[in-house]
Length: 143
Picture 1: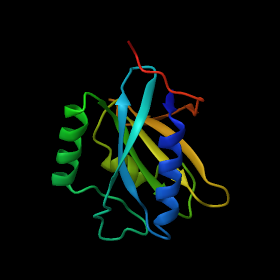
Picture 2: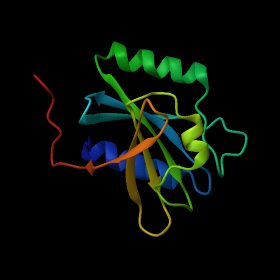
Picture 3: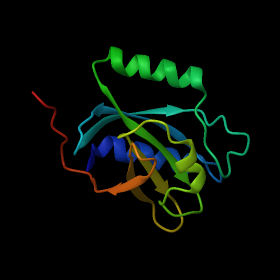
Picture 4: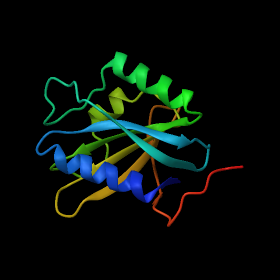
């Protein structure tokens, strides 16, 4: 399960809308857990893909800098997000082929009709497993 704070959920959807017909992408920061992760912050990235209408790619240097900033802030990398401007929230074969962070969440915001946010955990066996997305009134931090 992945719990997105209201602000994180809204940031993902708003970022997807601002991308128009191009995919947007970014990093999810918060508290990572094997069974449940909590997202407190969304860090936007520039889509460096050659064909951003159908692909996303975070530049490795930008991703490294984002990871460093998140970890310096005392947060975990929960996963990544991107949009499918005209497609479903189901990961594509390209999404699967480019996933590299086992047990992290890959959130997809689809804009075909109403915005919908889905999430999949990338497993060690190279497959995605759909996970429940929640947006509680508050996302409590672990103490």
